[in-house]
Length: 237
Image (tube, rainbow, N blue to C red; front, side, top):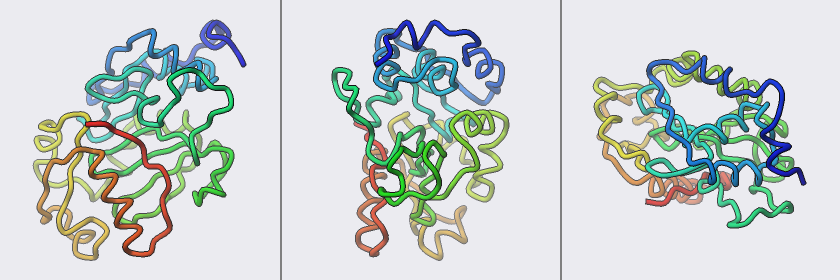
């Protein structure tokens, strides 16, 4: 197991690359250094990687006016990567998140995750180290073409607008701005229903705790006989 100095004292750290790419529509939340270092130590990735850079240098990132929340090393209004993935209270070299690492949630309850070594056994598509997305409109995991670094840089470079094309409704910016960072938006008819999928703008929307939104999604999969999506992240109210 590498100590914190081995993880942080590297040539070519990734944070300057991330910082330069951050657009005006993205807010970078300030880090709490002790918490960030503890999460990094559990992850055992260096800050040369963009994942390690975000963990050490942020309390999370809120992209595209709040639509997508990317988790960092410390928590507060937005939970930390460690909280969302249920990291052990003390560093445990033998521990790993089931299926993979939850990286981000969008306001509709969609989940971006980084596949773990046993992703196939967990029923997730793609390869180990590949980013996947659990879509609330299909209730299925979808693959993203690349790992964490490619995913993050694409999202910072306008990828949110392109990835969610057709999901934005008139006035969504005001609705999202009114949310807390531990809340999401539920829609009726649900996005996974035929009616909900074809008329996003016409749905009735309400703010709910993100934990409730994720739990509802998992319950619906069970009720509809859809494959259990596995862990979707833990977001305390």
